[in-house]
Length: 65
Image (cartoon, rainbow, N blue to C red):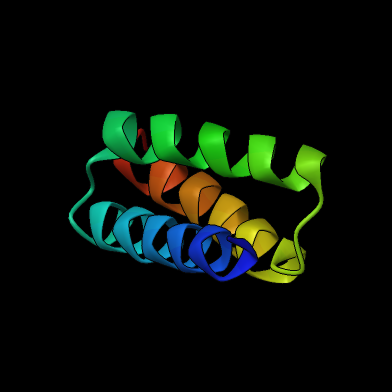
């Protein structure tokens, strides 16, 4: 079961990355919030989720400038 959770987190990270690359902020934001929920449950992917959060902010700034 833990392997399934790991795979789910990794897949969600990949989806967020793709949506950010395509400037789909609303979709990325929703999935990023779910990933933050995974952080609350404890996951070893904190650095990856933090990196995606920073990327989200960068894309948000570029889109709104």
